[in-house]
Amino acid sequence: MRYRFLLFLCFTFFGVKIATAQKELLTDSILVEGHYRTFHFVKSSKPNAMLIFILHGSGGDGLGTRKGAGKLEEKIDNENLVLVYPDGYKRYWNECRKTANSPANLENINENAFFEGMITYFDRKYLVNTDRVFAVGTSGGGHMAYKLALTMPEKLRAVTALIASLPDTSNMDCIEKKVALPVMIVNGTDDTTNPYEGGEVITGKISMGLVRSTERTFQYWATLAGYTKPPVKESLPDTDPTDKKTIERYTYKEKGKPEVTLLKVIGGHHDYPNDINVYLEALNFFKRQVNP
Image (cartoon, rainbow, N blue to C red; front, side, top):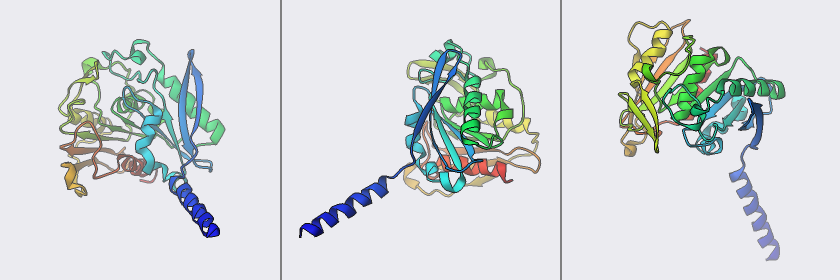
């Protein structure tokens, strides 16, 4: 009886260990203009990996963002990925919204130097493929992804912005290089924080100023890429009718031009739809830019 009990405990413990097994999370920092900037990451053991920055929203942090990216982490070995969860400065990014009164914006934190430093770090230490660098960000992190595309497009292959729209022209605080880049946008029509039709963005008690409508944001990137015809429309399967959301995909894609895609979440709020996993959708979008 004692032997059977011990055997049961061994199998139970082993089962729990396997069920909760997760890639090792590593943390490091680099010094950028007097500030130690921290980032967390999980990685493939192979060189030449795709490097993906996953950017948290305003008031969040890198570790909090990791919780939603579990399905993406499951792809690390098969897809050869390095996933990086950087921390914003005092929980915010200094992105392109001029009137944002967050600490990062008020202190004019050098985000470009931070991201360039991280790319160099992963290139030197883990031999990532610097031609396959991507960013996916949520809300304020989506604005940071836009900033990377606007101001340092030569360093990234593509970006995905979730529940975020470009700043209004009156609220633009970045010098735009206006280089065409693959961009995917995922926005909800009933979002009151990042209004689908444009307007003021309020996060807690902090105003981030005015943003463009989703359509204007979509057309900005499509025009840069040289598209003149209407995008291709596709209705995605409603795999979860209980969330009262449906998704329409609008895609600009022609040979020799960057893909520009909008996922219009009808009934979507300042959240993710249940019908798709937004991080896996971003990964598939990034892979299409590598293997068109």
